[in-house]
Image (cartoon, rainbow, N blue to C red; front, side, top):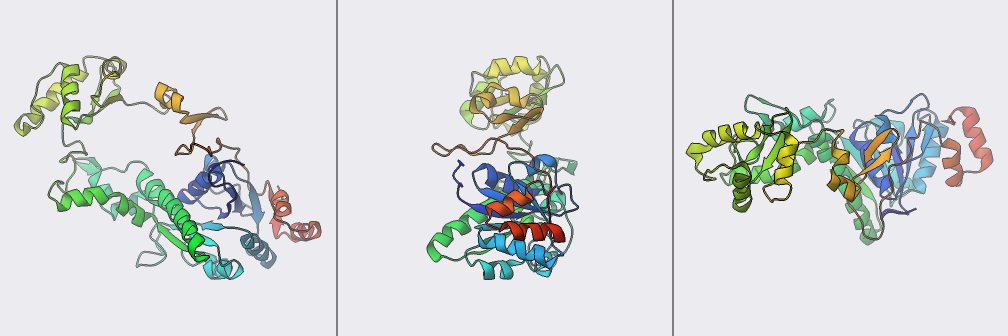
Length: 372
């Protein structure tokens, strides 16, 4: 094993989206993650989010299955679950039961609205969580808000805050010796990601509408432009010295903060960028600090020389997959691992966890666990 989290054992209850991605990160950072799937499930989530960790199939309606899971919890450091509030308690696998078996367990809970509050029991998705934080209102075009796929609430506000919370609780455990519950709500995390925007608004530097601000396309020097081939470049020339290089590269001449001429500047940039292809502009600006970059497709991004040099993407199956970040100097993370089907590793996991052979046989015969 390698990675900075080597030696850590995590019990993951299979879910969808942010929870599985959090466990993927933990696994490829070196933790031993055991995913608990349903016996009848082919895996609840997109296949790639199930990579790099074994799967055990357990019937959580069978008392023997519940007891087997609790025995695994006794040997673990972390539990991760992403079900609606109250479901784990009804199964007999809630925080109280797990902490009673293992007072050092860090119990990570991933939900959209949190464990309490008037909307805790409601369904939702990234777009609805972002909607209640102001994040959705702030993104998109002037005519309507648009979500940044499901990066803001699901994976930014959800996964990354869950992982941060788990690691913080593990650190605190080294002082107190005690575990605790980490209540990670996507709505909480998405709101936290808006800290700078709310701060700028309070200071009078952010207008509460879209395409009217420094970072949302409201300025002509922080936007995207179409090129002659229909592809785009991204322009982020905020600082004066970078803006000067933008002007030099395009052959234009505008004072950066001559607000009255911004419409004229935008029109000129639009016309100028359409005079060359995206890659021609990339060749012009690559050696400069103008903060101009080609907008790459999903096919193109893994081939960019910088991404190749840093190993950001790794060969995977018939294509590529992003590696986990960040980069560590002594304990490198693991490369993307195999996708494990539900119940593929049941017997092996139980054996490694110290279950006697006759007990494993009994669990299999009763249907409490299933080996695929």
